[in-house]
Length: 219
Image (cartoon, rainbow, N blue to C red):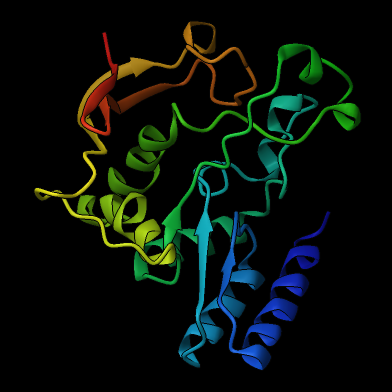
């Protein structure tokens, strides 16, 4: 599945957005060529936005082993693609970080690589990977990270979200210094399909509040 398979489709969709005046959001963008199409569309004033996943700005095709936990769609791309995505996250060409969280029961992933379904767990490691790969390396600021997870998605959806009275109380409290090791077997998920199992991180979500109620608190 070469990167051109994605970027050709993005180019087509950008042209359709130009033709129709329609609204286009590119989900899970992974290729340098795709991002170039999005940049050009934005420069022309078209209503085009895009998102990138933590695994695509962390891993590359060289990391893939004969292990279905590394099988995802779009597939992991080349080093130059990852560098382009990081640049887009930093300069505003990318609007959103989205997890593409795709849990699968272990039996479905514990098969030959070509028979396994696409997708990995994404929620539990999203903030930690962003802090590790982008903030702690000074590729982006902490404020930019928060924007990519919050007001960025809100803008794409045509919403306005602020931490003020009257707004939905959906908040994640996170630490930039908490050190922890991701053990997928300790996950509350019934799935185990993460390529980041066993990885040590500095920074983590500490609590999640949904509609004013605490739904998760790190022990």
